[in-house]
Image 1 (cartoon, rainbow over the protein chains, first blue to last red):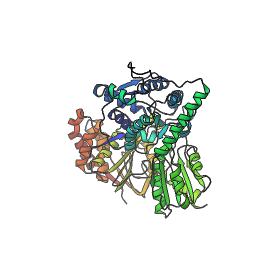
Image 2: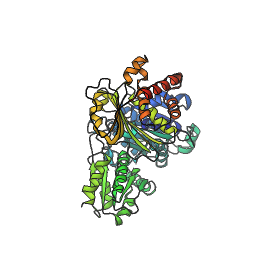
Image 3: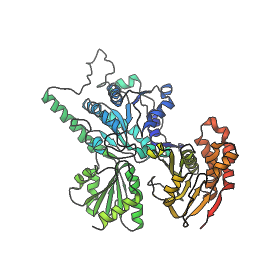
Image 4: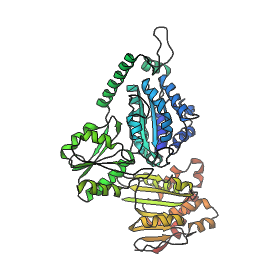
Length: 361
Length: 183
């Protein structure tokens, strides 16, 4: 077994990027994710793999560099935290509209506005429901450990290229700043120019040979009928993603009377609350969505016959709860417990919410 | 075995690196570990703390409200964390700069004059290793050879020459830690 290294979630993202053959990182520092750019700069991957690491002049510039790199069929990424990601939303919509692959990392902090530097999950809507304009979707991955921060980088790029779609790792200040032990992924070489031509030459701007027409990267089509057709194509792709890519972790759900639904750091806190509840004889299960889009709707629905109630736990005023309610369709009560503005719920608070909001009903 | 620890003091005292060495020592004996620092506004105010959890099994929440052991290195941290030690738990503090010592009688209290000892050793940089030694004397949750391995992992290679001195500081800490209230 490979050696386990103690590292921060942010460091794991940086190391995983180098090891999965990433071609370029473009970013601008912001707490609590600055270690991603710092680690990349310190590790100097340009000497080893030829990966480009660039501190852009702004988040807007970063996302447009990613747009350009993605258009060339390169594995490119950026990372930021909430206010920075808001600045990127225009670019994300363009990338989705141009059907380009890329990896985005949001290490979420409390908002709105400049908010706070402490952890939050209040960008769920922005990541899952849009952020930018237009009918587009990102695949959204929610790591709950430093190991998953590492693992989801490679998986994110795989999904991004499989569907030619932006993928976001939606993390938060806890997972970004926390250290845990990590088993690093095996080293993958970067694609050569020939490999990129072979794999992505049908759409990427790799330089045109005489035997084919040019590839045009754009999100603009002024002909409404054609634009509608393109939108239908996008929607068909999203249905395909929903069919194939749902990922979820279920703990003690099979005979649970009550269910906690939580992702990322909240799932870690909720797991402890679940353990405390079991000590008191309350049968609680934990369903942790790993993909926030596509959402594990069917997995929640499958548990409903034996559930008396669901508690959604988030570090927000309640965002993911809307997707839980859409899945549940009013069949069992769906309650909420959350902290906002950078505050973190404690396991004891979640246990109390299970008792007061679910069990005593 | 599961040990939930908070280490808290001023920025620059080596609070975070002490936590990191402890966490790495846990990895060296195949334990699960989490290391969660404060990085919020309180850190900008000069105080720093880190929650370290070592466990034989999977660690659910890296954030906890109560601790098995608190290692306290300034008054602000004592005021904040004394109440958060589990009944029957442990509190280890350096009396240097402490105006109001701990008052709880339902926990084990130890003091370690690490700042004074570091000054006597003429190297303030060993302060946190003296404290670590005190902690390990009271709570021998990681073996000394694993601590040394953890040190090697935590320190950049250019500082590996300092490991014998660090070890000496840890041993000194083990000698000078004093019992204040034992249950």
